[in-house]
Length: 109
DNA sequence: GTGATGACGCAGT
DNA sequence: GACTGCGCCATCA
View (cartoon, rainbow, N blue to C red):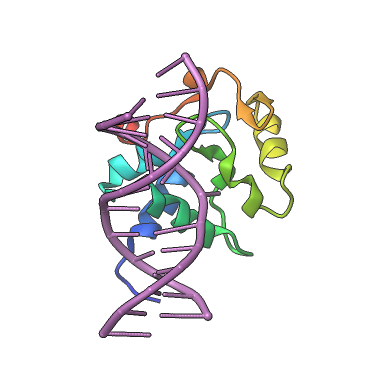
């Protein structure tokens, strides 16, 4: 692997910084890392799904607070279960009190 | 090397 | 206020 961290490595680290019980968005991460495109964040997280992935990708949702990425998990309900286990309320695959649970990456840095 | 796709976001209608 | 279409950048076939 390359010693130079790729753009998705930055996404992994930033995602790992998300505290328990909080959620972040693709746009926020993309803006913090200046990726220029929220799509790259989602695509990067797709790669984070693996046996050695300590990246809480379930804490990353889209701009609407919807668990759009749950389909990439082992089960389509895995993401919701994990979030609920951390204290985040999920309703119809969407984050309840999304604004209250929202976590700004660059803002915390 | 080109074409098509993708865990999204914004502007326009 | 809600829906549709287009754009962003990188990887896969």
